[in-house]
Each structure stands twice: as structure tokens, then as C-alpha cells.
Length: 199
Image 1 (tube, rainbow, N blue to C red):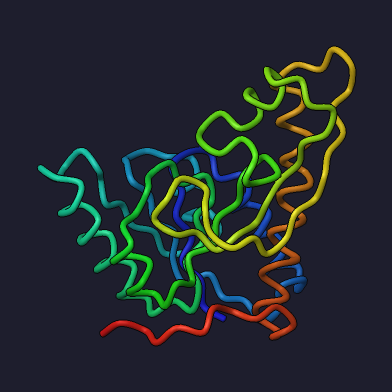
Image 2: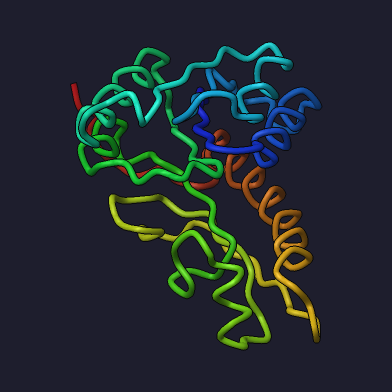
């Protein structure tokens, strides 16, 4: 299964996937490329160090979101991925982008969706006062952290826990869950969306 991974930041989930591929835990997964929406991300640096091809489609280099979205889709399509993975990718792509890849746009989120969507899922869960949060791996659509859930795992919130410590504990679970989902997709134990790929 060929994947293209999209990042906006440090790429800690990406590193976990790179390590799992190298260790043979994801023997049926090939990272075709890693792309970013801005220059100088550590995620792209991690990929380069691992010998993975990289590219940047800088959001700020395009006059409109639609033109950036089209350019990103064109660049991703060059690698003919079976699945596109949003790994801390902080941009919403269009429905056209997702349709172009057969609806196979995978996202991770540090909350139990549909609760606490958006960029501050951990902070929002703490502010609300819930005792349990967690992480979600799902098929993304053009909404904000919406789309069919594939897998979730709960993480209990400790008394007095701050956002940073909770987020770090969630990330540990999130990385493992992402690898489990990728393995399941690659082996067929988790079904991919049945969608005709766009030309």
C-alpha cells in the first residue's frame, strides 16, 4: 500500500510510521513521499533523513485556497498513493481533493470525535472538564475533523493534568493506533472506502 503523508509541523506521527516501516511492522506499507504546506518543517526533515522523497506546496505562495488545493492534489497524485495520510497537517482540503483520491484521506485527531474537533481538541477537553478523552483515526471529509471513524482509544485524564502532559500521553496512543490502522488497511482487515478514483 503506497501512502503519501502530509505534515505541517514536527512529524512525530510520521516518525512512528517511518520507524514501523523500517522495523517490518508495516511490511506492506510504502511511504511514497512526504509533503508539507510550508517551508522548513521538521516533518520534512525527518523524511529526508530517512531517505523518503519530500515536497512542499506552500500555502502562502498561492493567491487563493482553491489554487493551492489544486496544486497540492496535483503534486500528491504524482505519487499514485493508495491512501493519503494527514499527520498533523493543519490545512483543510477540499471535497474535490478527497474525491480525487477515492475518499482515502486518513486523519488523526487527539480527541474522541465527534467531541472536541478543531485545532485545540486537548485544550477543549480539559476546559470542558471531561474525565476521559482520547484519540481518533478516521476517514476525513471536507469538514473540520468529520468523516467516518475507523478506530478510537480512550485516555483517562489525571487530576490536575495540564494540556502538555495530556497531549503527550494521547500522542503515544495516537501513534500506535495510526500504525494499527495502516497495517489493517494494507492487509485488508480494515476496508477502505469503496470509491471510484477520479481521473
